[in-house]
Length: 205
Image 1 (tube, rainbow, N blue to C red):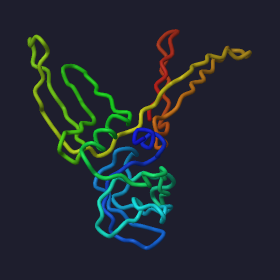
Image 2 (image 1 turned 45 degrees about the vertical axis):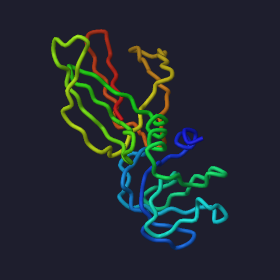
Image 3 (image 1 turned 90 degrees about the horizontal axis):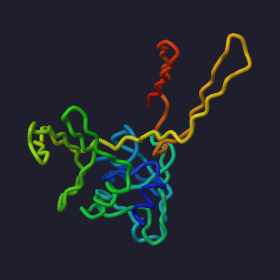
């Protein structure tokens, strides 16, 4: 299914074929759906020449699924009868938006919606809305709408173990294990702040 393809691919993006040099194609990316901060132009290989959907032509627009090093060469993710690309359509964009990790957030009256698929429009958007005070039920006014520049990976913590070492003075080690929602996430910094007998650990990505 399209949802499974989105979850297994490292990069999902819409683009236009600008060069075809079998087995390699060059693609001008118009928007990223999965994968942080990729370049505006990528090169891909690994298309199945025996699949009709993988017969790419110059100026062809499609949704691509890739894995590997996006700064050098991506390998197309093949999906049997569906090949390695999908048609750019509102239905496919809505399915992609539903499959990626994309959750709205609300803070201090501000609602941020990171990905919106609009019926009949071949793009995914982000939107910011402000709560109208004293409204019941809650009403929001739209403050900004922009085309999505890419859906960033989320980090999930699965387990946290606290280990007390046999040392003097006593040392405590915290082991946090988890995963990112795609292959693009990485840990940036780890900050530890002590307040009395309480230690606050902040892991940023």
